[in-house]
Amino acid sequence: MLAFGTAQQRARYLGGIARGEIVFSESISEPGAASSLKAIRTTARRDGADWVITGRKTHVNLGHQSDVTLVYAITEDGLTAFLVDTDLPGVSSVQTTPIGLRMLPTADMAFDEVRVPGSAVLGQVGAGLDTFLTTFNISRLGNASELIGYGRRALAQATAYAQG
Image (cartoon, rainbow, N blue to C red):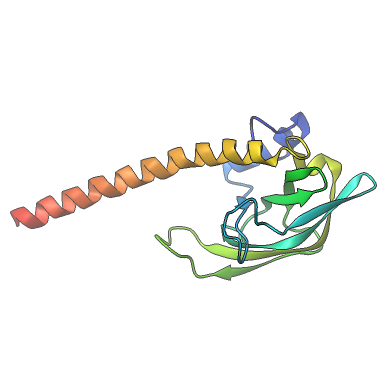
């Protein structure tokens, strides 16, 4: 978000996210499409100065708890990222049972004709792939450090068991 957010977006979200007052999620994966950006069906269409987003997302970490979610949608100009407040009319979520490590709750999220202002675009219209790759690469650093921690704990437990 730092690389792409406007001054208004940074002022509105970053401080609250950093202090834990605003819960953030990313709505990428879709039923039947997984995280393939080429196969997503969520759309956003212009309506005056606003955008109207329609689609479904699945396996959204902290989706049910989030205050704002980063939604990737197809526009007439291509893949675009939007910051969507989850209390807007048309946004709904259902908590689901997570897959994998189950460290975070997951949700399925629906966006039914959700109207957002033009200022909700993160980055440039049609340049959502750039936004995605930047956030994805940063999140992988967190994943790597988490897995190093798991590996260290597993090694310590295995060593204690073998000595035991």
